[in-house]
Length: 338
Image 1 (cartoon, helix red, strand yellow):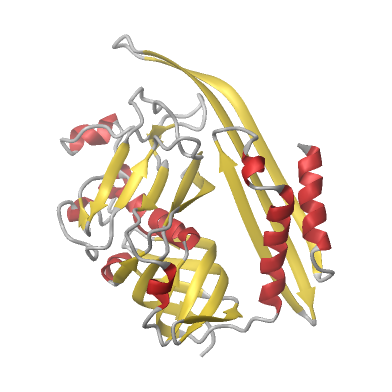
Image 2 (tube, rainbow, N blue to C red; image 1 turned 90 degrees about the horizontal axis):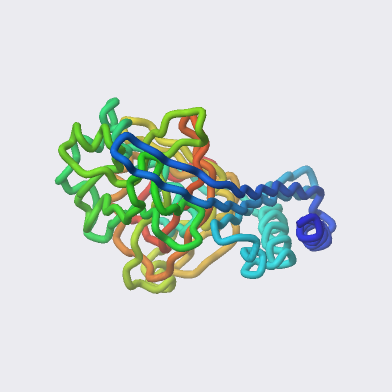
């Protein structure tokens, strides 16, 4: 493991002399959980998590840039067979170097293509938390949207705890409910929420296997698992076609959403789109808006698919994944220069 970390560090720093630092966080957890309840249920689960975050900084002529990459799995250390240390290091370094010559985007409303990494954080932050039934009961907008159309026909969301090897997968939640694939939005219509036993009773629904506790010291609460937008049938070239002036936002830096449905996502890697072609890189970009308005403006969804691991905070830490395909949004607010 130390050898792997050193190999990532070496590949990152040797990519270009303008790369000034590389920080590697590594975590693996193994353990066994036991669940017992008064109904006679007895569940034993072996758990394994492997996660790493690689961060690089670059500098040149007074410009400083930042690049981050995360990998994670419940399938074991073999994740580094799929993602070689050299490939990870070069990817992080290349992104940091490319941003050194980038300029801020123009601020305003533009058509955009979002990569799976950005789609994932949008699904997680802008919709996912609002679809957790405890937050929906606390004033989130999704409780009143059940059965209503809140997005275009292109939009279908799932929260799925059964994806083999994914960072948010498990067999049973911490109330003894089997993990399952939960449909949240189908063709733009809200079809369900994420429930524990308590909220399922209040909504006259079934528990969805989303009750999770960080450890035995805290009570299980409703948490996401692997939350994503379902792919459709467009190619990446299809998504670019017809965009005269816009942006391709490939990966995110951070994101947040409010109970009223507004959101903001900081972008880590971005490019201009000019006459349907990828153009020059841009940096220090962000997107913001209202979740429902944005979902209605999704007019094309790619056929590719990726999931990205993460650690979600909600008073407790939960291991999750989010993602989806590339998508095109007809218009979103882009933060940048005037």
